[in-house]
Image (cartoon, rainbow, N blue to C red; front, side, top):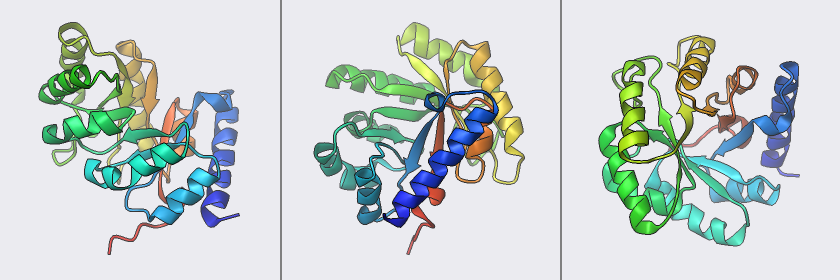
Length: 223
């Protein structure tokens, strides 16, 4: 058993315990293994262990490693969890199954156009900037209703849920609660929230996807 295999088993068991503590079943929350900047051998270990749901931050990086794995392994589900530039929208629609970072009208319009052109229905989440941080992507909470109205009524896009990345120094529970409240207010079914340091809390607070990288693959080497 590889180290990645062992880590996956530990994280999944911790996730099951967290869900059980709030009487949620284990199939109510899925683990996204965040594979950005991870070597191919670690991805291979995770895939060989049977894991199939992965997250990437950058379109170009994902293009370099995932098409081959998508052909080799059945059932791979790839999520874009990093900010998406509009000039990469066509590539993102072609490669990803889920885009979690819709955050502005221009991007929503282009994604609508690209999905129609490619005949592909990518599942979409709106990223909410719950901490209202100027340097971070995501729509401000006050602007969410307008963006949702555009997506639903003008563009006919089906928005599956909301995603957030809390400020690094804030208590994440506040942001998870806010995201859950916003989703309920707007009739959205799914929440993507929680990372390696707080995925158990996120699961207890209603997450349907948790995005875990370091706890699965180990520390990233950016050198």
